[in-house]
Amino acid sequence: MRAWIVMSARNAVLLPAIALAGMAGGCDRADAIGKGPKMQIEEKGLQATVELIRDRVRVPDDLALRVHFTNRSSAKLRLNGMFLDIGTVLVTVRDSDGQPIPKTPPPVPPIDDGQIGRVDLPPGGSEEYVYLGSDFLGEPLPPGRYQIRFAYENLPGRADEWTGKIDSGWLDFEVLEPGDDTEAEAPPDS
Image 1 (cartoon, rainbow, N blue to C red):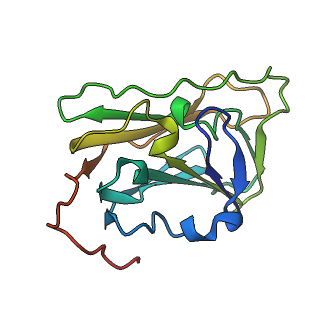
Image 2: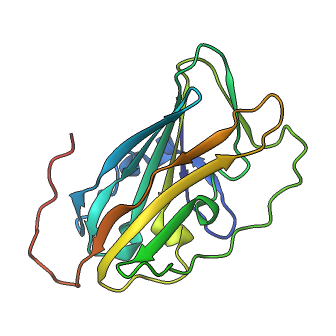
């Protein structure tokens, strides 16, 4: 399995997650609290586990969404991964009234030659991405309740690519007031 953490909103720079071992288990900052919801979606042999790493954060920059793709089919799956590292394309946030939260503008994508950005997953193979709120949100979030959604779609795809849609639906999270001590400790990781 390869894992990537998306680190730059403007340049979509990818770094192997092993280089950022402190982030491997999620947001480890003391001001990020509350383990978030997790869900699995499977379509046409591609399984995606989408996990909001924390459902309550004190610092909006600690908002993080982990997506783990696994090939559950008996054949190789080729994903069009040109946008898999760009949270501004795949992640949407809305407030408690359903109003969309502005995102940073996405980078200019490369010209699609049918090879660039493709991710080949052998049977049982997997790929993981972590999208950080500080990279896809256009502005810091004020305290309140929000929802986040991940949607990856490849319709229509090229003849040799996986086609379909992975959509997490809306996952709830909250940005707490600074200094709010109502939940001082994060639950143990499971």
